[in-house]
Image 1 (cartoon, rainbow, N blue to C red):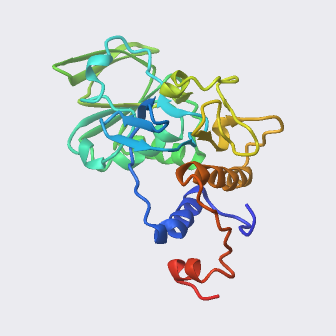
Image 2 (image 1 turned 120 degrees about the vertical axis):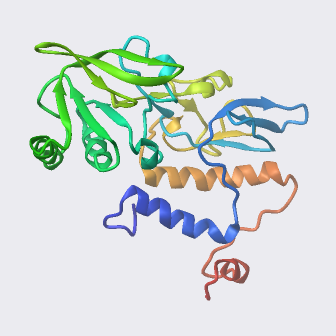
Length: 286
């Protein structure tokens, strides 16, 4: 990324949010668009999974490779417990306070949450099918040290059964080298990786090309006028999946989108080095 010898993803996001703040955009977080409908006047109605409804003249899809969804582990009867006592991510550590927690997996997520939730939970049992891990060695060493001090349990094996009622777990059965073991379990965190899915995007009639959205390289418009796609979700000959390329695509897309939003209006191209109105909005001087 030009101008940044090194920057983290979160650092870049923070800087972009700081840069856009003077324009006071609205954000709707932790939502997924469930439907996109074209209206008679050519505008669009967008509905989210939380039943929020937006109407707009232009829709821009910047969905990366799609949505990341956790892989469900092959544990019989897990579905009734999902969202009640089985979770695929941690939003609040307090949700696990005082619970008998079973964490399943052998990667960084499993080890990190084993270490972080141990002081909060009543008990922590880590389950992995083998004694070798795909996690940071330091985390693995800390886990084994805590096991030695009996601060947590580590079981080699696989969870093969769950016991509980009305969505609330009470115990889990682990099949290990020496047979079945039943451990107390009122909360479970399975970490079996993520899978990418386009979700509802695949149903919007955008003439997908290998799960990507074809666009023209003048406007980055899709096959549906008024719908644009930028970033890793789009496809065109010579496409490079780089953040730098995404910035270029957005610049051209914004010009085309403005012409749809304000038809007939003359677009004045401005530079922050010379535009006093932009400088005032950004709080800088020329």
